[in-house]
Length: 89
Image 1 (spheres, rainbow, N blue to C red):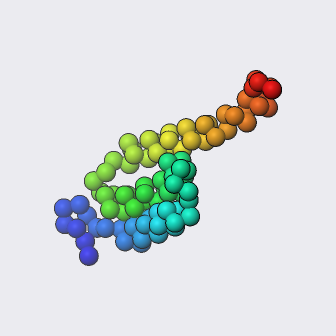
Image 2: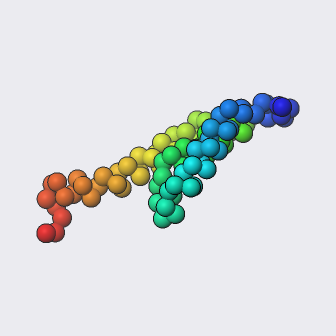
């Protein structure tokens, strides 16, 4: 099955993305979902499979990578502060 106005739907990528999203929704606590990179990556994969010919990967992919970097920095910052001895005892 193909779409005539947007191009073909990438079915394998869509099912992998949706499967990853379903797995993470079932196993990840609700308070951590906003920073769960596997859930976000699954949504990105499913979205790219549906809207690959119309969406701009030059805008979406760098934005996603910047979000992943921000999540990483936010998670590592307390450790860096503790190692440098900048936190209060």
